[in-house]
Length: 160
Image (cartoon, rainbow, N blue to C red; front, side, top):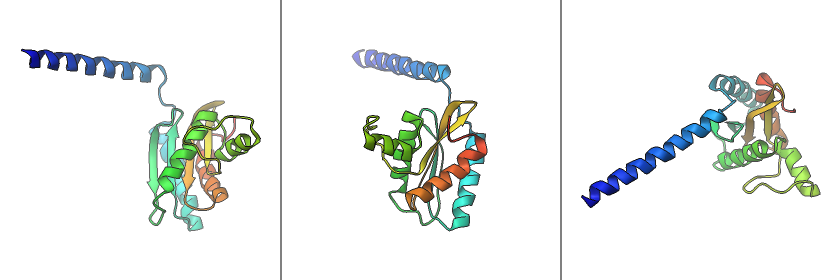
């Protein structure tokens, strides 16, 4: 009897928590669609391959949820972690990861926990609204940013 009671309680808690998660998502849905991410990814990957750069490219929505990821053969093992950290600062601040780094260094803004301060992550704006980020890692920071911009600019703007 006690076991059955605990099962019911656990089931009710799981149901309530999942209902809360779905309700939150309904109020503020992802603005980076799969189709937009695909368009940006194709452009970013083509740019990187044309340059011969082995990189990891991450596209997230405005909440920093991954929408698409590509790791080109030969990209370093830590490139995913760096791309993730770049996307984090972009979605938290709306700035490129390079601009974020400059502002943190100048003391204009506070650091984002888990973020990085070098180039390679860019925001994607459509109609003045942040819809997500494109972040790249694997080559020099400025080159990472070139790859990200190649994708972001096919679906929106990298500035508000």
